[in-house]
Length: 142
Image 1 (spheres, helix red, strand yellow):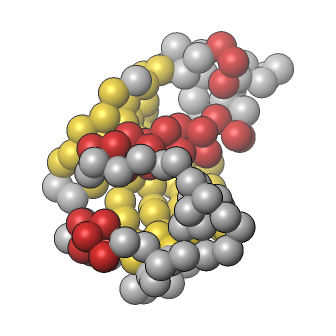
Image 2 (cartoon, one colour; image 1 turned 90 degrees about the vertical axis):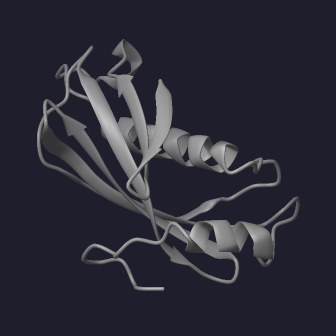
Image 3 (cartoon, helix red, strand yellow; image 1 turned 180 degrees about the vertical axis):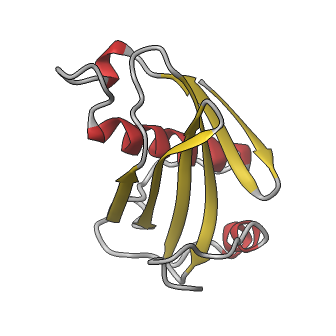
C-alpha cells in the first residue's frame, strides 16, 4: 500500500487482500473503511503529525457502486472537506479500473490522550485548511 498527494487529494493505492473479502468473493463492507483510515493515517504522517492520542470516528458513510474482488488494484482518493475547532471531515472515493467503486465520508474528533474533544493545534489546522476541497452532497461545508 502506498500514498501520495495529487491535486489537493491524498492518494492511497493498494490491492484487495483475501482478508478484505466475504463469502461472496467481493469486498466486505468494512474493507473500504479500513482503507480510508489507512489513507487518513498516511496523510497525517505526510504532514508530520502522529495519530497518538486519537481521532475517533464520530460519523461514517459509504455507498458501494461497483464490486471489488480479491487482488483487484484500487486507488483511494481522500480529501479534507471540513476543518472544525476539534474535528475533521473527509470525503473519499475508491476507484478500480478507472471507475468509482465506493464513495464515502467520515468525520473524526481530536481527543488527545483523554476522552474529551480538544482544539486542533493551530499549525495542523492551517495545514488541513490549505487542503480543503468542495464538499460532496451530504457533507456539511466548513
